[in-house]
Amino acid sequence: MSMQKPASGSLLVSVVLPCLDEADSVGRCIDEARQALDEASIKAEIVVVDNNSTDNSADVARSHGARVIFEPSPGYGSALRAGILAAFGEIVVMADADLTYDLSKIERLIRPVMDGSADLVLGERLSEAPASTMPFLHRKLGTPTLTYLVKRATHGLTVSDSQSGYRAFRRTEIIELGLTSTGMEFASEMLIRAGRKGLRVTETSTGYRERVGESKLNTISDGWRHLRQILLLAPQIMLIAPGVLLLALGCLFSVFGLVVPSGLVIGSLRWQPSFISGIALVVGLQALLAGLVIADRHRALFEAPSSKPRSAPSLASICLVLGIIITIAGVAIDATLFALWLQHARSITRVVALAALAQSLVIDGISMIGFGLLGPVLGRSWQTPDSAIQWTESFLEDGVVDSSTVVPL
Image (cartoon, rainbow, N blue to C red):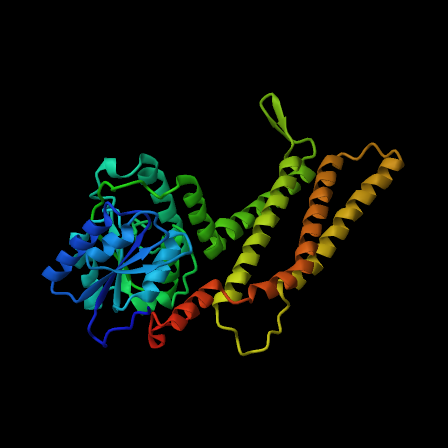
């Protein structure tokens, strides 16, 4: 049976709790949030998103007065997206259902959004969290690294704990971001898109507690999902810039090998830069191409199409032409060296550097030709509707949310 949206103005806040086998804690979370909201005289509802629990979490949540919805697609992000879309409140608070977040401090999180001084508020954990509540590597390596990358991806967003799952925001603004993540990387995607859209993001210290029950976090796989999400949203910091740097180093080493064919003497060792130059040129080009492809895909999916006809050549056509030129240059160098070898011209002093350069040119050229040929085919596949649009439409068809408040993801 579909839930109908309450009359306008009857609800201000929706607390969304994703839940997977949290029967031992979800009721206490609901009670803690409800007490804090009642004491602050804030009109609110609590929405528990059952994400395929095998225990009686849903029954416990209902018995404590929460509205329970079911999201069959597994994943933290899937559950939160479903909960945000199904929420009736103007402001959404997201938290976990394992008691790690102190829901008695919920007003502290909501108030800047209610006052209009912030669009998104994070509950910062690290400054007040005891060491026992978070693994050492998460606290000292994982969270700081991801926070640094998120800040770089948003050109300096001022946050210190990008991985906090305790957040308050205006519902429609977050829906308009077009979030698509299904796992723990949802937290990074929200911040990157919010920062790029110019939303005002602030933090307030809310602490962190010992969790009740088994952790759902997988350090390796979830960490990789975060890195992959940041890479897809900000290829300039993880692919394009490193690729350009490697290409520059490769060119520099190639020139050095040609100018000083004997290599660089370091003590009793002799270093020949021609070999590392080939590696740098190939890896640098691959990283640059991958970054440009991802950036182009991002524009195709999320930026409004321009009404002006596109007169500039496409990335694929540029790569095709340059790839042919570079490949021909590499083959020409190789052919020249082979002809000289047949003539027994043993006096060539730069043969190693030239051979390494020719090999790199051929590999890079073929790579660029391949992308030039496949780019248009891949580009057409990027235009397919995103799953988030289909997801939103399914909610509209079920009557769970009011179409007037939903912007397609």
